[in-house]
Length: 160
Image (cartoon, rainbow, N blue to C red; front, side, top):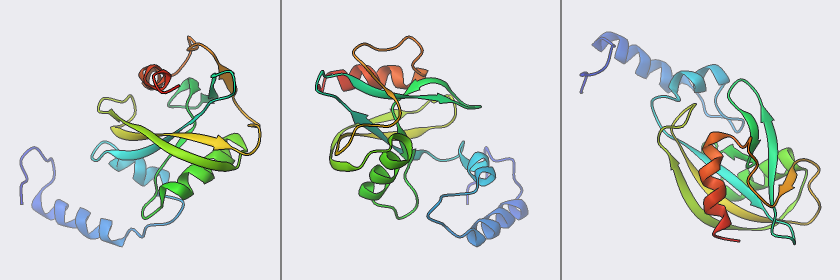
């Protein structure tokens, strides 16, 4: 057991391990307080959704919370034992009000130094059976896109 670079005693470490074993996974994810406590310890997997209209414009949604303010690609964190299919469809319905007809994996994006945490985003192009109820289509990158998605926009452009 390696304890270097940890500020826990052996006893504290064992207590932490025992407590973590009691946490039961749920389909809704971790409680926010638990997520916030461990997000700086391990990378998380996010699924980012790309929806493009017939004019080759990219759909972004506005996010304004304590972490980000600006336009961003809709997305969500993959839950424990959840399929890509389920997360993509639930996120598209919740954030955009659309039913997904099909989706295709485009590329991964590793945010090692994200402003909130380290996450690995898996970017998917989706096709929907109805028009989005939220968001706005952009032909050019908006100036107020969140920092993490600025590079993502540029890479998505190469797939259009």
